[in-house]
Amino acid sequence: MNNFFEVKFLHLFLLISVFTVGLSTVGCSQKPLDPKLQAIDCPGSVKNSYVDTYYGNTRIKQICMPKEEMKAMDGLDCKNTKAAAKLQVCEYADRIQFFADENNKVHIGMPSSGAPAKGVTTFSMEPITFTPPTTDNSSYNALFQSYKLDPSQLNIPKGFEPINDVTCSKSNGVIHNWDGCSFKFKHGDSDWYFTVGISAASQGNIPEADAIDAINNWSKYLPLLLEIKS
Image (cartoon, rainbow, N blue to C red; front, top):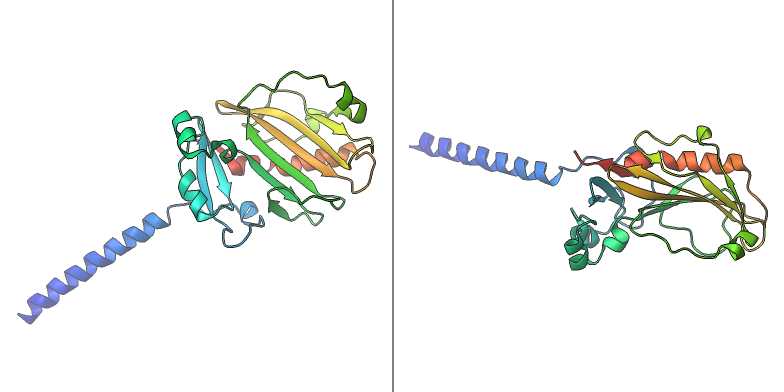
């Protein structure tokens, strides 16, 4: 009789163990982040956390997010107008912004206001969801000198095909110490804006070689943050 209860107890213990392991496996279903993403400076307790949102057939990896925001955005498709209206988070859920300090440490978001140190770069990316209005750029052109970069000098990853020229603007030392480069690229069924900023920490133009290096450094993050849904 005792043997009977011992066998029953052993079976019950094994079932509980299997069930517990199953739950643990479900809870750990997310793949670990790439080391480059793990190295990004996140505030507080959100380091190495992420949630996948979607834009069309593109999976967007949103990192450094508080758990309450992750819960609201989990599986959100930002091309689904019903989801966007219900949760009202699509306006920023598909935008990615980082900056690298003068020591090349990457942080979430944009640098605080004030004069940044030399060598600080910024990176932002978002899907093209609207057509910008046509405006008179004469005042802008008076302050900024634009130039185009040679595409052969850029290391844009395969699958992220530029659909226009890479254009950079020099501030001419008039109003700030940032230069910026931007272009559009196609990934999957969506078109995206890609913008990089470079700080000179003093008025004056930034060498084109620095702009090329900044674009190539930030381009490495594209396949880590965006992927086509299988």
